Length: 604
Ligand SMILES: Nc1ncnc2c1ncn2[C@@H]1O[C@H](COP(=O)(O)OP(=O)(O)O)[C@@H](O)[C@H]1O
Ligand SMILES: [Mg+2]
Image (cartoon, rainbow, N blue to C red; front, side, top):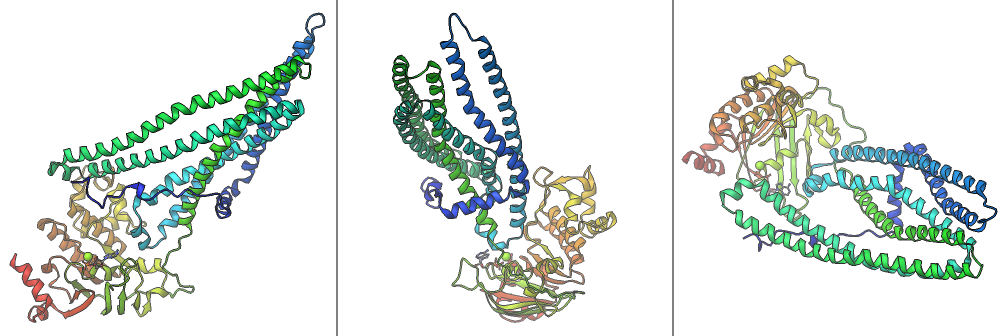
């Protein structure tokens, strides 16, 4: 049933866009490196160590050359033992200092990498929290969090390893080649003629391998997505006895990933031997040519050995550049995605000179508000809506599902701005208020409450972290939550959230109400706060809500109309317009949408 459902998108639908090394991308890379600026001394120490360590690397073949030349040329009657000893001591010193500089390099660059990553994560998260709701609606949570995890991690490699690698290989290449030319120009030219063969072989298999690997990873990702869905929805799977279906679906995806994996194995099995073959053929050619030069006296034996060692170094560094290029591309892609996020500004404009609200009365006027969601630019969700709520008034919003009730109340804490018209608090346009301040006066009890990992106490304190113990207890008491909380062995310290105990819907809602009570806002928004509860916990929650609403301007949306009959005013919405207003008594005695809706519910 699943395999032919068209809405299942696979990641291969969106080919990965490989960033090119353009000027723009380098600008981004530069921005990234700017994050290392506070640690520039560590960075400088690290880079200097890289330069020294890789220069020492080139001294090594030169010393070997001296060693062998001494050993081969001063044999027999006058062995030059002191010279040999001297060279060996120098060699040991070179190795020792190389080890020292490598330690300094790995330590400092690693440290800078970690610091940059930590800073970047903090900055990115803090930026994310400030973005407006539409941003989060347009993206999957996993997509956003992977910026924080994998993309930032990729960038770390750039600072900690790739940079050092690049410098090392560059020095090895340039230094090595210069020394090779000094030793023997002719032989160097022979060697340079051989190297391209190795590079071409490497590049050919390398790019093919990479392409297949990407395809393989895409297939595995598809399979993972399918497994995650099935596991997350295991109750549904089992209740529909759809296990076999799921098995087959997953099996197909895994089989298709296996096809790519088989290709990858094939290419790999060609890759390594062909590189080895190319390298040793090259070495044999160089040795053959060099051997002849030694025979003719144009080259000393030690020169040939040094030559061989340097050739291996140079070839290695040339080979590593393709790898480095791939890593650079990855880092560019990651930094592109990171900065793309950092460059998104919240579309809620903040006033330059925010109006101050000394005392908030909670007078809300909704003035000719029309609202479009971005992804539905042709149908207004709210149409020219006008409504006024006096301080302390309880207004119930009623209407069929999709009428725009939730949309209307999300405009009050300014999760969105109206497309046309305005909303005022105590006569001041919300856009002239600091959003932080505005939201400080609004309490929301949604249909499903989010509890964060931590204790029950810390979850209630979310409403006001500075609240005292007695205030906390009072809030829980008024929210009808105290008795069930104190029945837990750990009481208020009981852990909830991802790793904590599971609470029932009614218990969660009462914690949510305690949270709102602690915040003590002037304006209250209840969006179907009781609609997912059974009737027993509904009455407990309803009672707590009555306490909460007392003296606050309240907008209440209720699924069951019986819970809002006592509201000061009932506003009936239909297709984004207000179609009726009045008290319950006024409205049931008139023909209209309200009586219709109310009648329907009474029938059940
Ligand atoms: N975030 C959103 N993006 C786009 N359209 C939305 C969004 N939320 C709701 N809608 C649409 O707006 C209309 C009103 O929805 P909503 O305000 O949730 O209605 P109600 O709460 O009265 O059931 C519906 O047609 C719904 O599909
Ligand atoms: Mg709704």
